[in-house]
Structure formats: structure tokens, C-alpha cells
View 1 (cartoon, one colour):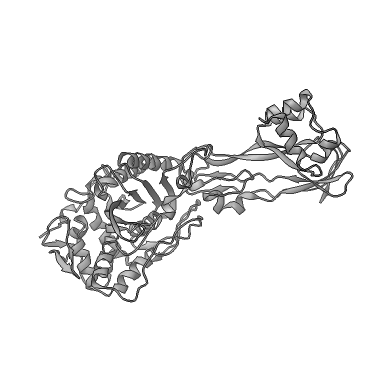
View 2: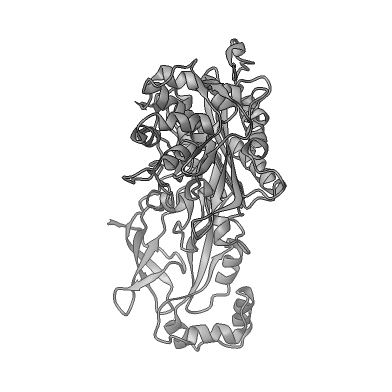
Length: 540
């Protein structure tokens, strides 16, 4: 502790009795740290306000709440009746502290202070303000009235953002006024948090997602944009969203960060991993041709949307062939495919550090039927989050190099670890370019002047009883520019109800809009069509 100069500072602070005559301890707040985007733009700041509190024992000792103009003025300023104000103070006549109002505007607090009412005091506090409004709200979260983070980054990084309050020992006169400062322990400053998010890219992503959910009359949506070379999350959007500055009318459903909490079967977005596994195991070569006739397995018909007697490896992706990937899966031990899924990040928490993140579900069963093995290859039998799927595609864009994800800004280089041989991952990423070319299932995901490597997907939803119902989740996931991937993007539209429900029709246009705007805003040089696109033959 250090000695403080002796002078009067007026009424302030929460007091704890050290003796019953004159000594008090006054808390000194440590302002909550700021949350910023990667360029230092403020996303959450603390605004100074005041709290109005009463010392009931002092108030009553000085005659209690009276009918004079000063008490009536205080009641009016606090939007209370005079009787309600008196009742609150009289409810604990021996008490030394009760809040009358929180987060009062400083100008109004100064006016209340000038009323000079005995036992009525002020203390400094802060109110959280979110300059970007609803932008990144589901990610940032919010605090309670006491400044504790209760959702999102505010909760996950609460310890760093809080700091530690200091304390000042003071002497008061018989009217409760501070007449002398005795000692002080300074507060420990809070830390600011600089996120990896770019507010501009976040806004682009949210606007496109919100419009798509509304247009498709969908239940919800989520999107994640990753900087492939560093693993930084550049945008994380969720709909429905809310305005953290005015949460009136918002529900718990609106607060959900669906990018990390909602899980779905990923559908055809896993097919590139099946091809990589088959290539890694030496079952096929990049130019292999696969029998894709429909067939029956355990009484269930495995077929494609279109009829293709045979397809190249590229064609399996371009036409999103269930028969093709299921035949590949059946030709190898199921553990090989499980290992690939796990190595790319399915079934485990991403380690991003956000409260509420789901790990998804990767089955650990001992017995696999032939049908289970077949459908596992086109995305059924496992559950993933949009964030996990984006992480997988960032690893594809990294040519098999998995980098840890980060929600805070970091500087390159970022060391990753290899989960797939570079040559194989590069070959399959090149095959994925065919999906957005004419004839592909994701042609609406194409971005003018840029090469993109994508995969669309559509998965049936499961109801509470565990049965599949006629509701769908539409996916598009991919990387760009395909010649040297910098960004991985996933768009998920949950339960579209406006007619279309395939990923190629519902989420692919959103992917195109977001990725196109990101590439242009980041001044990424266009790479046009693949120089050797003529070899992307799909059928023989």
C-alpha cells in the first residue's frame, strides 16, 4: 500500500466497515479491456457511467426519505415513486449499502450528486458498448450488468478482460463524506483482446448469409472464413443474430453461435477426403475410372442424381457421385477413412477456446455394416460443426498441412503438421475445381476471374426420434484462389423452405458472393480458369 495525500474527494465508492466510526475501504474499479478486430477497430468497449447507491442506516439516522423537493427529484430521476424509493431504503434499516440505480449517465449522476442528500452516494462503474452493433454479435457475446462476460468472447476471455480491482482506505465524517484518503492499492489493468476477425470481411459474410437465410425461408445459417496460411478466423457469422446494445426481445436462440455449436451430418462435403484416402492407400490413381452404376446394398439402393455408368476420379467430385465414393469406401478397411476424418479434425474440439464449441461426433463402433460403410463415404453417420468443416477445407487448401485455428490475431509463419501427402491433397484440390465449372454440381459457386475449388453437399436432417425427415441442410465449402489457396470458406443453410434445398442451389450462390467480395477486397490477383482445365474429364 502507498500513502495518499490528505484531501476531500466527495462521496464515492462501495464501502466496507473497518470500524463503526470513520474508516472505510473503497473499491477502485479496473476498467474492462477492449475487444478489437485484427486492424484495431473497436468491437467492444467500456463506457464510464455511475451507480447510485444508498446507505440506509445513514439515511434513516438523518430523518429518512422526506417529502421535500430534493427527495422527490431523486425519485423522479430514478424513475421511481417516492413511496417506492422509501420502501427500498427502509427494507433494511441497519444496512450500509443498497443499489438504487446502475449504469447511470454521468451527467445525470452529477445532477443527483448536487442534491446533496444524506446517505445517497455514487460510485464509478462502466457499461459495455458494441460499436459495430449486430456485426459479430454471436461471436463477441456480451456482459451482465456487473461487467462479467456471459456469452461469446466476452465469456471465453473474461479473465483476461477483467483486470483486478484496487482498494482505497478512507476516513469519513459522520455524514458519510470522505474527508481523508489514507492508503491505496492500485487496480491491475485489464488486457485488451485483438481478434483475428476482420470487421469488413465479417460484415460481408453476415450480409450475404442473412439475405440467403431470409430468401430461402430457412431456419438458420452459419458461415466461417479462414486465412489458410495462418489458421486465423477472418469471419464467423451466425443467423439469427441480435444487437448486443439492445437485447430486448432477443432469445437464447438468437444468442447461439451456430458456427461452433450446431452439428449436422456433412453430406457430400466429405467426398474429397474419401478420394484422398483411396489415393493414399494405392487403391486408385488420379486418372482411374470407377464403375458408378447404381447398385443395391442391404436392401437399399445406392444411386446418383444422374445416371453415369462410369466416372473418372474428377468426375466423382464434379457429379457428386454417391456410387463412386461408396465403392471406394467398400474397397478399403473402414478404419482408413475414419483415420482420415479424424486427422483432418472431425470428432475433436478445434481448440479455438470459445465456450460452447461442440466436438461433433465421429463414431467408434466395432461393427460396421456394408451400408454403414457406404453411406459414411457420402457424409452420413458422423456429425460436424461448420467450424470443423471450415478447418477441414483450410487443410485441403494447405495441401494436407493442418494448422491450428486461432480467434486472436497471430503473425506468420504458423507451423502445422502434415495429415495428407502434399501431392495427393494438391491433386484432389485440383479435381475440386471441376465442381464450379460448367457441368458441375456447384457451378453457382463460381467466382468471376478466379479459380475456386469447392464441394457442395446436401444432407437430410434427423428429428428428435432419430429418424430422417424431409428437411435438409445445404452446404458449400471450398478454397480460393485455387492456384494458390489463401481463403477457406464454408456456408451452411439449415432447413431451406423456399423450394430449393440442394447445396448447389442454396448455399453455392452465397459462397460465390462472399468469396468474390473477399478476394477483391483483399486485392488478390485473379488467376482465371485452370491452364490445363481441358483434362478435367468427367466421363468416358
